[in-house]
Length: 266
Length: 179
Image 1 (cartoon, each protein chain N blue to C red):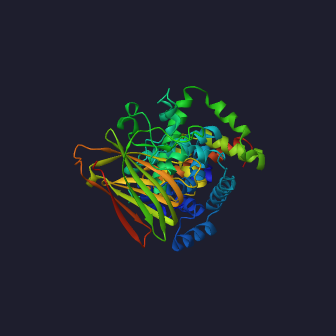
Image 2: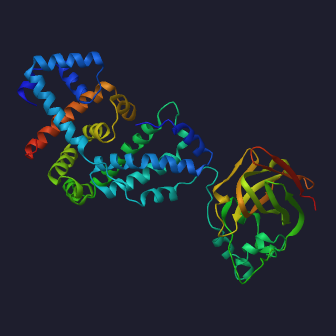
Image 3: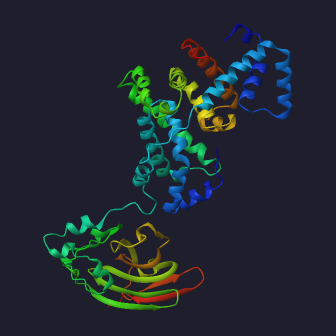
């Protein structure tokens, strides 16, 4: 600190610094002007601080590494979406059967061809899983011997397609094959049906991703859909399950709404 | 800096909206990275810290109090992470290496090497509590009030630390022949 600076009182020093930082009111600016006009020490300090401040402010803003944003986004787990992983690993664990890798896109479009060995498949395996169904062109159809429970057909102007329900060993599989012109929200009242969300999978290679647009809250599962999409929702029974409950499924585009039911009764 | 959309984006993030998350990361990635870089003087450390800041912020998003500005909250995390990073690294490498490592920073390729390197070196010679106010004021464009909020110190302390920090920097730069 210069000797001259020491002759300035604290108020003057504070005024000069605040002036350099643009933190003064109009009245204080006038006071600073008066000080600078009357004190060479104040002018010297003001000049030094201003010069340093300009040096600092002139340093360029650095661009972060281009890959940093993707690295960050790739590592952040969203609320209610924490168990994200590919079904590829899960189904690979069903080896040695070819059925393990046979949860194919074809299967998801053609409802009701599951023939997977039930003894190798439990609700625990599917707990809150999220992913893309494994494609196996050779297998053609998947192996999953579930029992067909029922099927809905949608034929509205704004949404069409089918929803089918299958059950195996206490695990329910809802297979959606939808085509909607605009954004549609699919809502499932799980609590009322004595069911809980266990996982979601999407046919590989589709535009958009239902995996990114689902949410479980207050016993209701909501899934966003737009365009042609095939996806499967896995549900497990809860302790409160009544064997004759119905799963109510609501389709809504904000303006129009359709509610349909599928019974879990055998 | 402040973004009026932040409260809505944060609420959407809490609901699991990934687009909202992307927007927040987009908005704050660069300022957080720059604050970390100026505090630590090393681009690789700054990238590591920036990543850690966002992971921590979104992991604890439920603890964010919307009464306060989001940027104050994320800057506070950034400063704490930078301080901790420097402390951890200090055990492994001398400070001189830290300064020398700055010689290859991208900034030097486009700016006057003497001045920018000199200023960064002068910054690195400041004690942490002085350096942090300079970083927030000059590289993050924070006001006295915002620095006070971020660091949880009185505004008066911000002013006095900023003044002392600049005086020290001026002396260091004079010794380097930069004035």
